[in-house]
Amino acid sequence: MDELVVDGDNATLFVRPTSEFRHVFTTSMAELKQRKEEYRRQRDLPAVTRDGVEVSLQMNANLLIDLPQLDETGAAGIGLYRTEVPFMVRSAFPDVDAQTRLYERILDAAAGRPVVFRTLDVGGDKLLPYFNEAGDEENPAMGWRALRVALDRPVVLREQLRAMVRASAGRRLRVMLPMVAEVAEMEAARRVLEVEVERAGQRGETLPEALDVGVMLEVPSLVFQLDKLLQRTDFISVGSNDLMQFMYAADRGNARLDGRYDPLSAPMLTILRDVVRRCADAGVPLSLCGEMAGQPLDAMALIGLGFRTLSMSPGAIGPVRTMTRSLNAGELGNYLESLLESTDHSFRVRLRWFAKDHGVDL
Image (cartoon, rainbow, N blue to C red; front, side):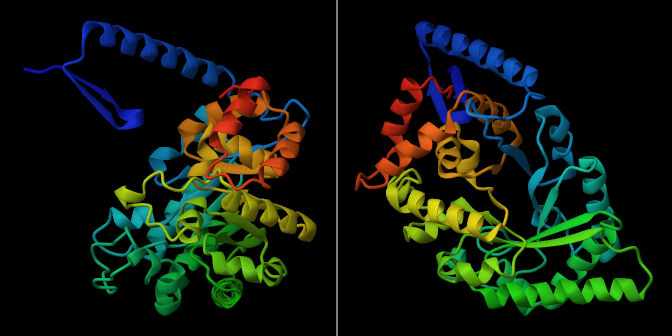
């Protein structure tokens, strides 16, 4: 029988490891455990940079089982609740009452901290066993998915929004629309929500204390309508995974393209910097909830660009908080401006050297 060592964090399997390797691996695991303990001790410390910039570290969530992580990690809220995941574990569409109970429990667990509900994002690689109208698509990531499905099948969208309105009775409701490609799509979905709020009032139900409707910025076409969008939306959250995929025309599920393009490169960082500036000028709150937010080096770059709200997997909050507290955001911002003049394939190595030279804890 062969001995195996599994490194789950890096998706690596070692077969028949030597005694020396086992010793090194065991030592690394002990150091990792010690570091995680340190993250737990720091969970109540503010995520403030050395030059006084406050960053809101929020968590992404999928199921009720994730909610205890709010307190365990010291997250400032839920920056992305993926509502499609509870749909995916059922054998049929949950009705309005079932959805209402779910959203109520999420808001209760948040205990006043912000919760952003993303409307149903199915299609692409997220299929419902009881809803497969799309059939076979040559490129499902760019096909009939997310808000496109919701606008074509408005009953599903209406019922979900009705449940959110009921669950938010007397509390702030934050709704985020995925895969928005043009302002007209956002306006169409917003009208559906406004009708549900109006009907709830007519039924004598307690309405949300406030209503924020935002969009995920993940389709590059929306950048060219950003000024119009900023006049109509209450917040924007960058979905870096799809934005990266569509910007580079590179399927993120294609193994041959894995690592070929880097988010820490001029095209991606330039567009993110411009979005930060335009949102700041318009006074529209901005966040990022993709994979970049959960990688300390990438998150460091985002803070340098001006992002002040990041949402990530719960396990990433500790490392990103530690990095944030060791960073001087102003110094990094100036350095990034000089980097963006370069045509290098990636700035990842340069940013690592910056972190090392400036004592940033990655």
